Length: 289
Ligand SMILES: [Zn+2]
Image 1 (tube, protein in one colour):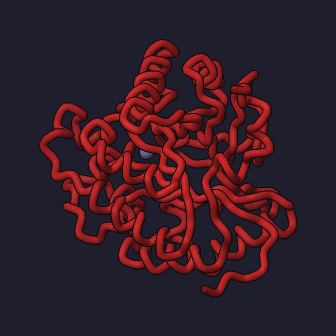
Image 2: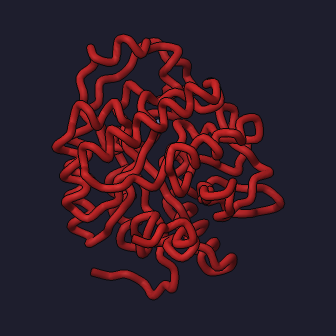
């Protein structure tokens, strides 16, 4: 397998949710109707596990409690394959539309569900739609109270649904006991460009995404954090009706190229789980046994 010389190991992450749960669809799909949709997440996660195994890569799976309860074998299979199991909350409510108590209840429940099903400690959390920002920094205290050690919930960019462009761009202690590891951006012409995956990765030409990750590694001396969703490799997912043009474009753009691009990304860079890539920063929170 060809893998260029590179001093940096980057963090590969997957937000485990299904296509009907994405925040941009919330105005079109009631949460109470979720049970009526065909779930495709298990099949897609199995495909991802095969891809990662083929490339010898370990990753972090930020998994929804709602999904984990319905697919406990999938959760255990993620762990059996040597990947890190982390939390994406329970019900995919944006952190910035919840009260502090509701947020705490959601993240605590997700941690309990994931730990009960897997038998291992869950240390990491990612907020739905990167919904921790300047208006709800209390969320970090709630994560500390729930027993999380790190969060990867801030995207330091300007975006109409999320983002905190003024946030530090690389890992920092967000509150005592919790490290925030933001999604990676590339600083070009005084702007933070999103280089951490998702819709941008499908939209930009592959070579540009590749250049941004290399730039962060080589010129800033930092590991990149990259994310995608299981539904992004699923070209046959049922199409949701009634979406605005913008939402439809963002969800489906270049989805047919995603598997090939991911395979190339797995070849071009070194990847590992979040807790391994950032082990030195996180070890201050480990309690001796
Ligand atoms: Zn999500």
